[in-house]
Image (cartoon, rainbow over the protein chains, first blue to last red):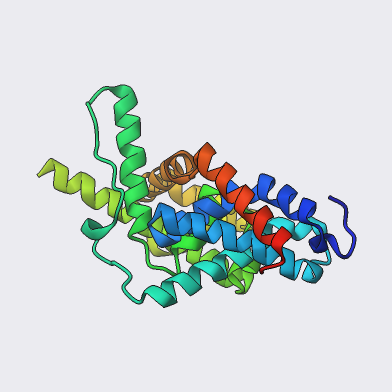
Length: 177
Length: 79
């Protein structure tokens, strides 16, 4: 893709965007919405919107943050429509159960615990953490996606990290009792 | 540096956003404070694990279906 105006008028351009960013959009949506089917719906809607809004993208180097921003707003729309956001982790769907206690499974259990803990982060912190620390998006892009200042984006990531550390630490302490 | 100040600077330290003097002060505190050192190690550990723990990949069939649906919707002009 080159930095020129009007990429968004081409279906081929949207397909190229889809191939490059569909998994990233799905990760953001899946973590924000706790549901695979809704995550997939957001993927589809995001790339359709990319076509209709493609003329707004002036700098192709910002395509990733631009597409994530569309996806983020699609997720907010879904959450607003639901108005029944589960806050009890026990209500979250598709929770995977821990498995046998060998080394590989220990790593998998840590991953599952962390995944579950991420899902309990407040809605303002979760997308910031997912973008920065799961997807590896630079902090400046996180700020652009969330439509906040750099210091706010960094504060959200910071709070999310400390909260996750607390959650995992509390679990460890409970397990030792 | 106090422990609460260290906690406030944790992300700046991890992101490489501290000035040289601030970084020196943070590292000096960490060298003498096992609690803050443990917090930093824990956060580093969860950051190492985060991509593998929470990155989702579309199921190949779902990816194919969604890609086709996007193309069909755009081709139909119904968007």
